Image 1: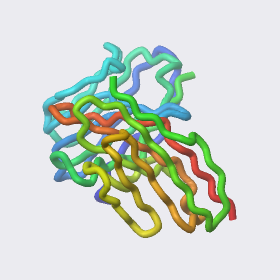
Image 2: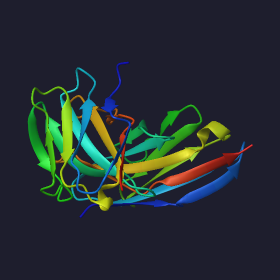
Image 3: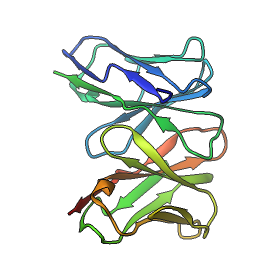
Image 4: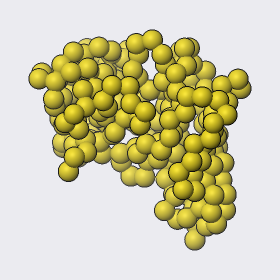
Amino acid sequence: DTGVSQDPRHKITKRGQNVTFRCDPISEHNRLYWYRQTLGQGPEFLTYFQNEAQLEKSRLLSDRFSAERPKGSFSTLEIQRTEQGDSAMYLCASSFKVSAYGYTFGSGTRLTVV
Amino acid sequence: EDKVVQSPLSLVVHEGDTVTLNCSYEVTNFRSLLWYKQEKKAPTFLFMLTSSGIEKKSGRLSSILDKKELFSILNITATQTGDSAIYLCASSRRGGSEKLVFGKGTKLTVNP
């Protein structure tokens, strides 16, 4: 499978716990993006990496959220002290430069905070 | 703040019908408008539009951009049940920001 992979597919956690999601982009893509999507809404931008550098962060990304891409390949998104409002689909996408074909999205990680 | 508005939010048609989905935008330093199809999880890329008046076409789907009136339409002719999905419109900016700003999507249901 040469697409964007996300793990896990689903995560149920209790409020206050920490969770970490992983994204493996398409191997030749140097740009990686995280988005969050709630029911009835379009995806909302969270953050963007070019290689290992985190170049842009949304105001949505509170201090409980942190993302890394340590070697410019896979990325992790960690949410500390989860809240019910964090329940959403977390989508990862990747691209090579500014592509004429937009991003390629992964299938997402659905987080439910109970 | 950049804004993308899609209409209608929901649409139910019969197989064989033609549909038009609308997307209007307010974007500083506009670069492009993109359409995605989201069936279950991952949005899949349909079109990227950067120039006014040039229609992009893929099979029964086509799209066009009007940069003067700040909108785009996505047309689907001879709809099939497999076209049932959420269609997302997104805008991008010039000048360093790589993020896309998405609309809420149009949920299309095609009944047999």
